[in-house]
Length: 307
Image (tube, rainbow, N blue to C red; front, side, top):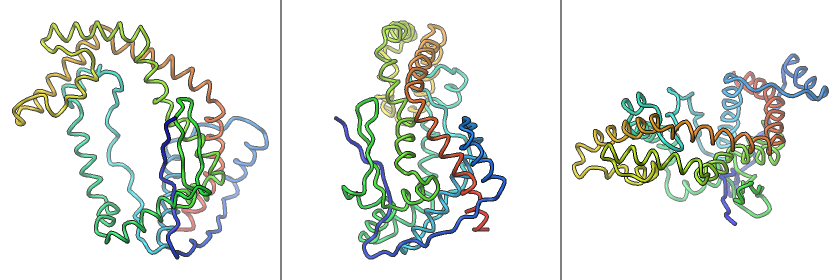
């Protein structure tokens, strides 16, 4: 059975507890949350503004917790741009392929932004012993009595520590850390459950074979998109022509995915398996919706107290 530890948070040797913040939810928000709970009605899906509010509140709590342990943490600003488009099976957007190739430049921008993040620079500048203490404060001790576990449908078991600043922030915001962790872990890993099933489906392998024949006719003999991914960065013996080579290959991949129906088949199969997986985990989605709805007034009150 696979086991994976998800960073938990907090607990530095000799560190003092972060001060408890009293939250004063506004009456309208609190009334809405209580009414929804008492009526037993489904909670509405959060808006992008709701999710941004929860994220800002969680980062504010992390910053306060880390400050209490003698460290600095800068809440990250909202992302300047949307995340790169994801093609888990095959690129099937010719225009996107022509503009982005395999998205290597997009990934490079993300890496540069991470390197420029003040938290990244701050941690890198700490002496080794303080860097370890920072990690302990943020991610937790990993002690057996301070770890939550959840076994995913795929058989993988995830663990989360409960005594780091990230976990403490989530506990303050959502109150039920165990319920939140279980719901988030299952929902966030649905793709890891769905995608192997799609790739082993005979309908997928048949569509991939048609795509492979199309690619061979264009002088790109690859059995599948995964073979191309494994060779990215080594497609040309001349580094100066690598980007051009990748773009040409990405356009061919997308062209064949469209003309053979491989892209459409993969998308349909993903939808089929994802719908089944989602139906099996309705309780996890309901738990996340409920905890988010209850956390919104707390998040708003917390940010009001900080302004």
